[in-house]
Image 1 (cartoon, rainbow, N blue to C red):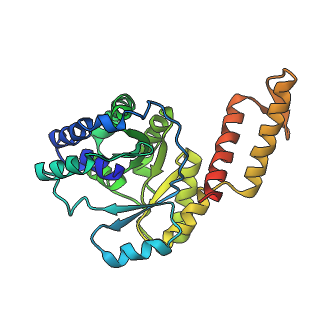
Image 2: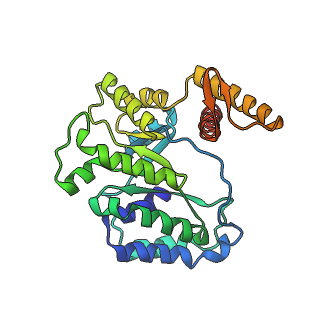
Length: 277
């Protein structure tokens, strides 16, 4: 549902997007129990696999794949017209949700990148009113290249600025950031290198187009056991120093402060979410 809504903003007109959001708004009564800023369980999206929504064979195979997130891609197969909006609104009537729908949006054009901050602000303001929780952002690299007239290269050097801006803006709003696709699905070493680069930049996951890419990507976006031990011990040491009324302190030869603690907490949160899958 979340990705279906997000793709309205990708390809169709603003008017259709507004009608779809309006349909959700009219059902606000059954979502009134949701409060803005509701705390939701962290769901990792280290690998985001695209699967054709009309390919039954591939859909059946999903149950055998250990992938964090599978996207049933209906973008080119479903016309988002008035009939679709009416059907969407009809199915909402009388439905109850235990938690908000997680909304994942896309950045894939030059205009989209320029308006990215405003979109995140609007999603934060309006989402809770209609039972939506903005959970993450996907960088659509190929469409973005077409938008700016760039030539797509294997090392993606032409996309460095856009990737960095997506990460910075996404993290400013506390969202997950999903990096670009590595199109050569047979090149595992190149895939790992780009995934590792994305993780170092701050991305939390990566889009994949073939099941063979899942394992490598999810490994590169997972903290190593040594890293988890470092984070766990740092948090324990920080709490101990807090009891003693101390702020910054030295841990394993490095000065530790609040940013270091935040990094450690993120590692522990991700490790816990991955192990809990």
